[in-house]
Each structure stands twice: as C-alpha cells, then as structure tokens.
Length: 133
Image 1: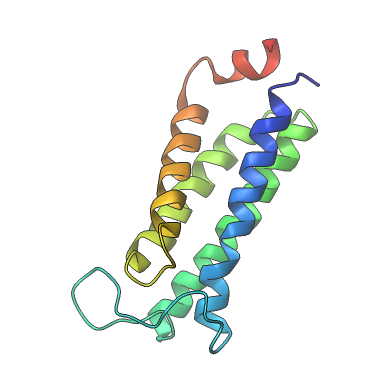
Image 2: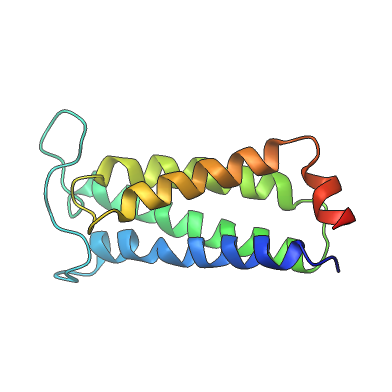
C-alpha cells in the first residue's frame, strides 16, 4: 500500500462520517445539530419535512459511499474513483439545501470537501498519484 492511499482514505472516511449530522437532523427529533430552518431553495421545506427526510437518507447514502471508497482505497481496489465521485455528488445534493440550517461553516466545509474529492478522483493522474506515492 502506498502512503498517499492512507490519508485520502482517512479523509474520505471522516468526511463521510460527518454526514451523520444531516441524517440525524432529519430523523432524530431535537438533535440540536441542524436547525429546522427552511432550506435555501424556494419554499418552506425543512429538514424534518418528508423531503428533508429523503435528503437525510441521501446523507446516509453518502456516508456509506465514502466509507466504501475508503475501504476500496485501503484494499487497493480499482473502484475507489467512481465510488468517491458518486459519493461526492450525492453529498452535494444532500447537504447544500441545508446551508442555512447547518451549524457554523459545516455545510461549506462539506461542500468544499466534496468538490475537492470529486476533482481529485476525476483527475487522470489520480490513480498514478495513489499508486506511485
């Protein structure tokens, strides 16, 4: 295993685990992690609404996807790239609507991590960087 696989895998795993706050905010009443303020899109949709719960499930899917990508990196499987890219895209869809409801800069940090991981996995040299490091 090359040394660069480890920090990328750990970052993906930790980032994925962070998605638990949006899942919990939608499914566990009064978590205090995410407020029930309306989302950033038009309408009064909140994280505890039915659509909010669907997006909460997408956050859970992103968590599982990032964990799978981390596993693939640790075990040197070739499917880490599409898994990381798909998880990043799902994460953006699940998190960005709750920009105003998330604590501090959590949503901003998550979006930046998603874009960074997506771009890294998209780069043609990503596999070379992971394997040659």
